[in-house]
Every structure is written in C-alpha cells, then in structure tokens.
Image (tube, rainbow, N blue to C red; front, side, top):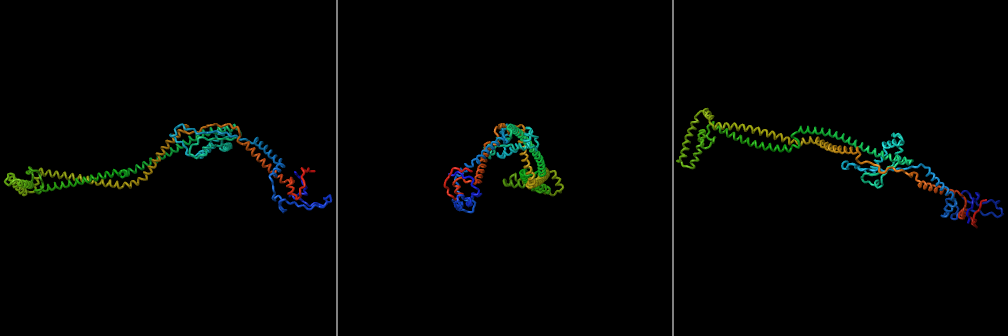
Length: 533
C-alpha cells in the first residue's frame, strides 16, 4: 500500500490540488506517443467549476486517526507546553488565603419578657443589615488604625481594599429559609496574600465588630430613650394645655354639661313635685283665708250663719250666731222629744231671748258693735287666723315662684346640654387622643429606659466570637487543579487547531484514496515509501 507520495511537482499539482495533464513533447524521451490528456475527476462527481474543497467528499473515521498519527507532534507539543505553562502559573501566580471566624448571638442575661429584643426581619434583611454594618467606615477605619495598615481616614485606600476582601455568609439552612427568626450564627471571611495577616485581620475584624455593635446598640437605645422622652414631655405640655381648655369650657357651662343631664332631670322632677305640692297648699290656704274673712265679715255685719262653735259655748257667740245655733239644737230636740219636754221648752226660751238680743244688737251703732267685737275672743282668734293664713299664702307664693324659676333654669340646662356637648366634643376628643398618646409614650419611655440600662450594662443580646479565625494553609486562589484543567484544555484546543491547519495547508497525497480522488489514473501497485531525491 502506498504510504506517502511526497511533494509532487508544482507543475503537476497547482495550488488547488488540480493536475495539469498536458506535458510538453520534448519531455517524452522514449519517443512514445504523447499520452492523452488526463483530466482529474472525482470518483463521485463530474468535473465542475466549483472549488474542490467545497465538493462533497467521503471521510472515514480512520482518516482522522491517520491525520493525528501524521501530525502527532503538532498536537502533543501544544499540550505539553500548556502543562508547563499551567505549572508555572500555579507556581508564580499571586496566592490568596482566606481566614474565617464564626460569630454567634449570645442569649441575653436578663429575662426576654423584661425587654423585647426580637427583630421582625427575615434572614436576608438581617443579613444585609449586618453586612452593611461590618463594612461600615467606623469599623474598617478602626481595624486599619489598630493593625497599622494606614491612617484610617475616610479616603484611605486601605479601607477600600479591606471592604473588597471581606465576605460574610450564614449557614445554608438558615440562609435559604424565609422564616422570621433570629440569625444565630454567621461567618466572617477575610482574604489576603499573607496567611498570617489574613488570620490576624479576621480576628481583629471580629473583635472590632462585636465591640462596635455593642456600642452602637447602646447609642441606639440612648437615642431612642432621648427621642421618646422629648415626645413624652411635648405630649405632657399639650395634655396640660388641653386639660386647662377643657376645664375652662366646663366651668363656663357648669350645670349644662352632658354628664350633668341625669342629675338635672332628677332635680327637675323633684322641683315639679314640690311645685305641685306648694300649689295645692296655696289653694288650701287661700280657701281657708276666704272662709276666715267671711266669718269676720259676718261678725261685723251681725250675720247669724258664719261662726260655728261646740255645744255649751253658745253664750260666747254673737246674738246672730247664737240664734242659728239654738235653732239647730231645738230642731234636733224636737225630733227626739215632745214640745212639753223640759229640754225643748228651755231651748225655746233661750231662742226667744237670743232673738231679742239680735234685735237689740242691730239697733246699736256700728262703732259700738266693732268695739264689742274687739273684746270678743272668737273675733280676735279669727283675726289671728286671717293674718296667719295671709303669711302662709305669701310664703307659699314665694315657694311656687322659686320652684317655677328653678324649673325654668333646669329645663334650660337640659335643653342646652346637646349644644354644650357639641361645643365640648372637639376639645374632649383632642384631650382623649392626647391622653391616650401620653399613656403610650409613658409606657414606651419606661420600656426604653429599661432597654437603655440593659444595653449599657451589656446584659441583652450580644454578639460573641464562637470560633476564632483559623490559619489558612491552602490558598483559595489560584486553585491548582482548576488552573491545570484550563491549561490542558487550552493545549488540546491549540494542538487541534494547529493539526487541522497544518493538514489543510499540506498539498501532499498520502494514500490511494486521495490519489484516486486527485488523478483519474489506475493504480497498478503500491510501494512502501518513495524517498525524496
């Protein structure tokens, strides 16, 4: 089998690997007839004007193995070179070491029921807040100063370098949940080219963070207490002002306040009952006065039907009255006794005498009758009764007038209560709201004062270093196996590209199939190798 036919003449094969089949006549040394013109035709297509590289060819898998075998050094050399380059990179690239320290949340010393320290944030939000605090300027500036890395000024480049080298993570089960719970542990990492310095700065960073966090919590507690105290004092002033306004308004409407309406109604009912009783008593006294005045008038005019006295006192009565009395007694006696009964006769005799006295009394002058009445005890008693009745009537009239006046006042108070309630509603509502706010601020001030004392004494929730920073023994960058893998992959890609490129640019014919494809001539035999002359 033909292994290779090297370097055909450029006159036989052009740049497109086509055969120039026409040869000059003087080249035929043997005097043979010129060979007919040979035109290369692919075994599977007729000749076309297209580029043979664009024509369809049949390629076997073993052809690639043949190419690799022929161009093995073009493939192996880049791979070996890449391995050496990878080893050099692993050896000479700057190494980075990462030191990690674990921080945890220590349980508060005081009872959680005394100070509520639960943070209503999910894990991502709390993680973000702690990350921002960890890379804040005060913490990084203090680390730079204590480690003597720089001045610690805000524009110090060491602060920016530290910020880029710090990383904070949490355990995966805690980081992936959205439950509202406290973040108990998290890991702080610091990356540096020197493993000892990475460990030292990681420990310093954790210590400064714990200390600054405690100070920050204490400052926040103090600021919170101061703010609540300011709000509490302002609320106290507003509440006192509203109390004064409400008190003045109630004093101005005393007796007409809505809360006094039930008492006013009860008093109004009592006054009406009192008015009715006084009116009844007044009418009774007026009737009694009228009766006494009629009796007195009858005595003055000598009337006989005005005064009534018990039996046995007829002699003390005026004649007209004694006549009337005796007539009644005589009528009563005749109903029981006969006319000849001594009692009846006696009454008839007294009646006759009384009539004579009446006639004699009427014949007397009026002045004499009045003078006689002045000495009459019955007349004087009637005059005293009349004066007493008049005095009682005046008192009852004043009582009725006072009751009516008071009823009018209380009625006006009851009727004015809704209007007063409307006027006081705004002030009362502001007072109630301010009083409620005052109570809430008082409770918050008490709680914030306790929280401030707890944070100042560091008796609450505090961060602590669970595991100090470890000394890193293996660099995190570069990763040797990763560098070598990339180098070998790059060498393979480069070797493959060089092998394919060399095969594409090579114009030699290497086997029978290529020979048949290039020349339409029969193959009569195969030799092992044709050495170039």
